[in-house]
Length: 456
Image (tube, rainbow, N blue to C red; front, top):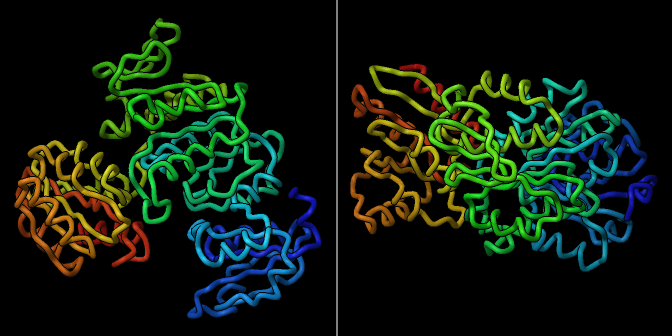
């Protein structure tokens, strides 16, 4: 299957979110005949048409609810939303029929121009992608930040030229169906348990992340976390040139933290890069993110002086260990993007005072033992909500942590924290769970937290 086979033929786009709409717009512009399908019977065709503003090409067919069998025979390609599992019944129909499946990033890559810097990992993707994007913008005239960060790669692909540098935040879901996708520089920041309700096993999940090195050669670069067992072991079979980063080990080759300094080592010879206090980001997780970003910048031949200026000026990404305000002597932090235990552990590590920790939410099949064990005397009270609240409470009790309370609503949680936290303490929203049981997204959860805090 190649890009030319699409023109003049029907391509099914599943889903009408950012990815699906972007894919449909690209397909229309290149002369394909997109068929847009959404299983949600509660949406209306006019809503989808409104999202397609700026669409160019033959009027797309829209199907809502159920997909007729006869349409399958007419398709040359399927482009599913990242939210659609490859082993779902609908995808099984296409796979059994022998119809090729491309993710949105695969579709976009086949029409885009320029170079790609692709970033994945369980945690830290958004912060690192945003920072790398700023680094690239400071040096290259044509840059696009795309992918899981909220901007459709497909919608922007045809705007790119040979000098363009695209920076992509790429999720494991988006890496399930790639073939030609090729990053000049890739990064796997870490791999820890997440999305096991989708990928079922850690081996499958790790393999999806490793797909970001698809088509890479030793002429390309892959930035890997030396401190993470999965990424360190992957280095031996990685097809690209590997550059490590570490906050825990002094490396012979790569970027590492030693005390308050970051160094770059090559063949055992180390050069100081910067002091960690020269950056605005907090927490060891962000030191790792910065080292990964520096490594990617240098792999793209951005001068170190330019990179360090951007790093020094860079502020935390919204919803990721984001300082909100100090009210009545209490510091409030929004880490709503801490949607799994490992990410939430980083939030705890960044705290330096007694903390009221807000946790709980949608259950992605995670276990919470390591998160509870990471409290380390910092958590004064664990304030729980959502469908996982009883599960987390039982886990806390098992580990001898009994300072927890359970609430049914977000308002009760926020009121409890603001009424009980004392001067010199902190309130941290870092749920270790997805938001979908109570909120449309982690962004909405975080924004409501910030609105509440700012109203105090």
